[in-house]
Picture: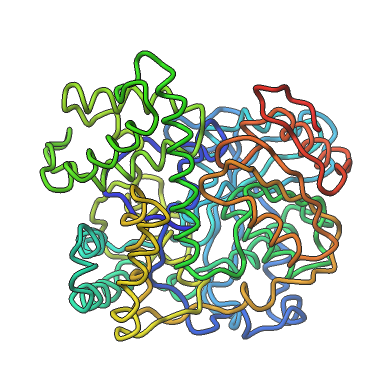
Length: 538
């Protein structure tokens, strides 16, 4: 599920450490060939000639270098083919990090925190305390997927701002032909700044990299915990390597079938519901800046967005702060109920003092213009990772996974109808979400592997966690994906709020750990109640 990209800088948030700030932020952009290397090479060839040099490597661990890295966090790397269709050709390195098991280790559990586009190494460094219980039996390992962080990071350079400007405001809705031309021109700049990894980015290639990691780590099977987009990655790995699946948990389950337009509608509805839940909570607090009536509070938010769009206020950085900037910030804060008090204070700052700093703290992005270079081999130094890597990778990976490419005529003809649907889904978030339908225009078609082949799996049983009040990945995606994956999928129903359940629900946390550590699966369809009602299951 995707959202429009933000231009404002912010503090990066750990995916499961309070807020899932990186989860499902992106809308697609450049990516892979029509089927990429995903369907060009059958599973049997993954172990064929040319791959042994990758599968036979071992990870060399050492202390992590960089600012604010925990002393007990170790870093390493694996080398993978740039193009799996040509394993004898160019290579790239994938950055790894781990916390070692505190006792006897039964192997590794691999984490992906979502995104796509989030650095796993950075996230584990910030939020590793959430996973310390797993070190009772495992080395807890994560990675920067190809194109992300230190693993040959992609970038659009100055085109990042051009993309955002092209889809900002109503221009993309009233003059789509101009916007589509500008997006097409920006794609060429993205290719220049990203280097050779760009045609080989996407979930299928990342899943094949995970198989190299599994072998390099010395594990017989892959034990895995994936959040949000990480559930898509886990499902693709399971489809590609069904007999190498160990204990796999997918939390905040992504869709495998819906096109970007439908994902955007689902996101708009989910965030509208989350906003209404927040406002219901807010008006019970004397400090709520919208008064004590929930319906009036919703009207005030809509009027405030419209007012800021027509008459922006100066941001802390001197740039105009628009209604859409506000919508993006609110959307990020709604990923976790724990952030509601902070969101309330930030909105009060804006209404009472015109101070945007609180809201800007929730926004994602930040842009610098990196020097062009060939980042297709070794790890990139931390200080050289482009600051637009997150939005650039989000766009690249989402479009690499999506085979739909409507023509300019189709986009123009459908835009009015889509706008009505989005505004009906959410009067606050609808416009913000709608611009994503333009983002993949003019890019090479992505693979159809995810939509066509990730189904009817013959794997070990896996645990899928869906949260009823999730604003990003609706609960129905959990049950739909479980039905699609087949009998191997076991569903845990988390009757709580927020995006994903592992950090917000003690019940979910306990059941996930019990499965990963001891193989104890809850019954299919069992549930965890809201935390306010206790942490036991129903």
